[in-house]
Length: 328
Ligand code: SAM
Ligand code: SF4
Image 1 (cartoon, helix red, strand yellow):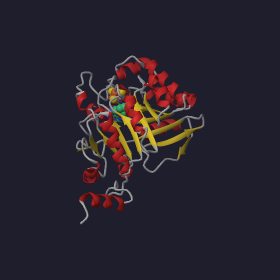
Image 2 (cartoon, protein in one colour):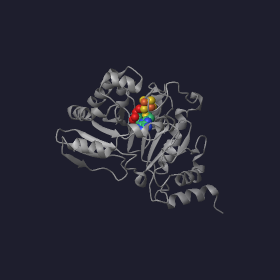
Image 3 (cartoon, rainbow, N blue to C red):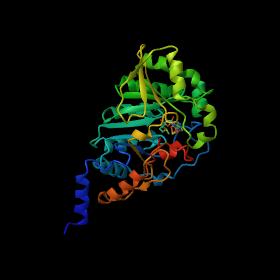
Image 4 (tube, rainbow, N blue to C red):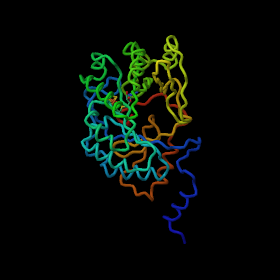
């Protein structure tokens, strides 16, 4: 009689990719949160006196490696490190070194950029070549108000250094009405001057931002219309499961929009998220997940099937948990 183990193996082999849900969404991208803590306090993301989870709860580098290794065998093709602030972990390099061994098509990092410069020479020799850096203002004083830090110059410089070193760099900008939406054209000029793609993120109804999101919300359609007053926008091709729609401008700027609120992309979403303490979630808006810490690979399949069922078909209106807690 076949053992449970060989049956599980056989059922896995019969499926082209087991990570396809009932809405025919194939999960192939994984966001890995290394920690919820951060050295910034962006006002829309976390309160000043935020309480983070104890560091003892974070997955260890070997646990992150093993979970990612297993998920790659089940069909994950791309991994991106996030948080909180991923570079804020002392063992950040150990984690990147371990994940660089995975047979993924893309290994990326989302960071606030403050500690990035010192890691760039190290990162250059790893497979982590796709770096998204968050920068909500090109104005030092305003940057200070948004992030509650005074490290604008370091962040700007690390962005330019990363670009010079040949990383695939993108800027993430959350444009908010009356806060920084007057910088739209400044970011276009920045993209054109430095050859760095800029993506404008719609402010989401998540955690901190829920109470006042409506008042500050700038929808991507309005921003596109504003751009069209000055430029003709040539659409760029994107993968089916891309979260952004992108344009090339005649001045060379590459501008994208992540319209999570006004044009949700749930129907083609291919992402799962692993929290810093080992919970696998099907969606940014999902509070519940499945704990993978300590789970043996042979026991993964039923758990992953549970997570497949947890993915909402359509966008949920809001979530009380903050982005930094889930892994943005
Ligand atoms: N600390 C890193 C950083 O800032 O890039 C990685 C984590 S951060 C949570 C990831 C992204 O989430 C950032 O670009 C940030 O601007 C974005 N973010 C946080 N809260 C958001 C919200 N309510 N709506 C839209 N984007 C948000
Ligand atoms: Fe930190 Fe990123 Fe949240 Fe800003 S957006 S507080 S940098 S986790």
